[in-house]
Length: 467
Ligand SMILES: *[C@@H]1O[C@H](CO)[C@@H](O)[C@H](O)[C@H]1NC(C)=O
Ligand SMILES: *[C@@H]1O[C@H](CO)[C@@H](O)[C@H](O)[C@H]1NC(C)=O
Ligand SMILES: *[C@@H]1O[C@H](CO)[C@@H](O)[C@H](O)[C@H]1NC(C)=O
Ligand SMILES: *[C@@H]1O[C@H](CO)[C@@H](O)[C@H](O)[C@H]1NC(C)=O
Ligand SMILES: *[C@@H]1O[C@H](CO)[C@@H](O)[C@H](O)[C@H]1NC(C)=O
Image (cartoon, rainbow, N blue to C red; front, side, top):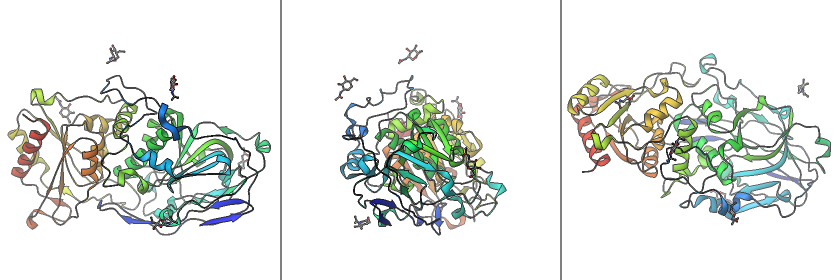
């Protein structure tokens, strides 16, 4: 919805998220968009002539990563010579309000000298609370309502409607902008000079969506020519605590919630981040996932994990890791924490594989019992990862290129392309197996024949370590 009023544009992007991505556990329904109000306002719009977008001309960014530098320690900005996405975003960018508002391809926007008045927002739930304290909390109440005047921006001249309502309707958030003729009266307002990326998470408790959101923010960081410590991330949602929350602080300069802000803050630059499902990671046919390698190495590095090249093939000591799916409470909508797609015969598989491949190091783990840093450490040291279809397989993107993933499916379960794509983009071998035996299924677990497991592992080990 786009309104024109007193030369100013009030953008409202409201709507629903309602989609299923074949991930089994992932179904979000945000049944109504929070709030709904506008007001007037174009304040003037002081202008900085000739201001251009630094990252728009990314020629002189620092080079990409040195090949497997064990001392890798920077976190951008990176360059990806194979990337086609940044150019595409730049191609149809629209600049308004003398550059105070730049919209990129309906996906995200850059706001300069923007005042954020957090009193013009309302939270319907407590952000970061333990999920078991709010059982059955409605997901729609985990989004923050924003009223007109939440964003105040300098603006003069004509504004054009650039956000495509059809494409953006899933973005529940509304932006409202009011402006003034000068910033003078705000001179006493606390200022935030670091670029702040606003992220609204939907699948915050799900490894796949958490990684998508983090990847999106990482792309924007690089798009705008910043290192990860040069940006802050403002989580504009009020989900309960989730296992991936800490990653934001670890990876980026700082993670903020709305309640961390002053009542009114003047931000030098705000990036209105893209919605999860606008991510290049969700574009199935992309031949190359932009910045996949810097993303992987930055995420590992920021968690203190050193990317390594496996020596396993030389010694035939492949690390084979099963990820078990066990019950755990991840979010209020599943208070019992029950999960499906378990493996019915975990112990038997381990025993059988250890006997069949005595030189291999074979183990199984419930990933969510570990810290994120330990999860990353483990996965990056794994040569062959085996798991029933589930969000944990998103960790494929952090595996060492050349390793392998085996994704298992229960009978009759729809097959998803997401993890296969992550494997391909990250240079990881991939294989899929689906049960066809009705008797091998119960309601929440699948029996995997040991002989099938050893065949899958043997085949994969030959791909990982070709003769
Ligand atoms: C890129 O940066 C280097 C070093 O700062 C500088 O010498 C060079 O002129 C820059 N190139 C461009 C195209 O701006
Ligand atoms: C990495 O750092 C260590 C210690 O600072 C140094 O001895 C080593 O040469 C470095 N390695 C590379 C490849 O730069
Ligand atoms: C908006 O997006 C939809 C869906 O991608 C597309 O069909 C439509 O043509 C777009 N409208 C404009 C005005 O670009
Ligand atoms: C922020 O707003 C609250 C509620 O309106 C008010 O009580 C408080 O004094 C304000 N703080 C500042 C620093 O203005
Ligand atoms: C064997 O694998 C486990 C889990 O992947 C790992 O913690 C352990 O360090 C590995 N052992 C060796 C000798 O590599």
